[in-house]
Length: 220
Image 1 (cartoon, rainbow, N blue to C red):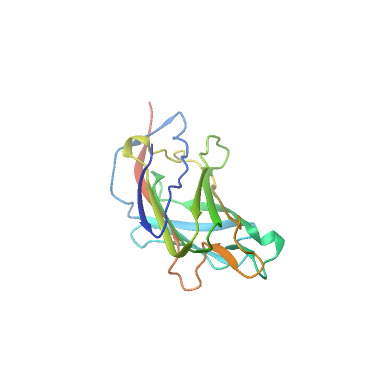
Image 2: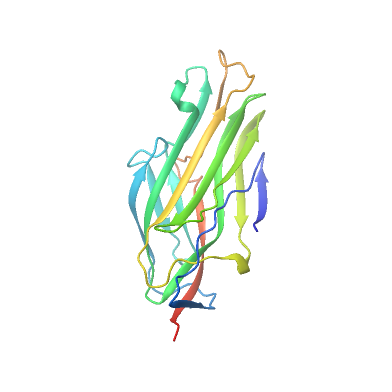
């Protein structure tokens, strides 16, 4: 269902499917981004990887995508790491305000971060998203194996025929769930440290959600 492009020292596929517009509406084909302003409100922030104030959301000027940037999203094991730090998670609730007459799907997601995994250690990233009140979220889990030292990135693309759009004319939160886990395995935890991040203090590592837009028309 998904076509993936990988870059970096290690990369894996992550993407979750949303659901289609409800009965009573239809999405008419259209590829242009809406001219009206798209805004996103960060309504809820929960989780050990995204303390309030450590996450930001920005919309591209041309309405083609939005970015989520974390500044404290790091999971680690080993020397000087607390027992609970092997797992970090984040749950975001977004209010995506779109121009009247338009609906959106997520066509592509770029995930980025940094990993420092010792030999025998591993790091796992899990992610999914869904529209409020809808089931069927596809949650993906992928693992990076040490030794690994460097940036990681993955791009997942949903084929056009598989795109699923937010319900036309309805206000529903767009929820994003992510998780990082680090497993020491047989690595030396007494003198070494393994970690995986999805954070960025300078904005260089952001998760990018690419919109696909359609105009809504009422079925008669």
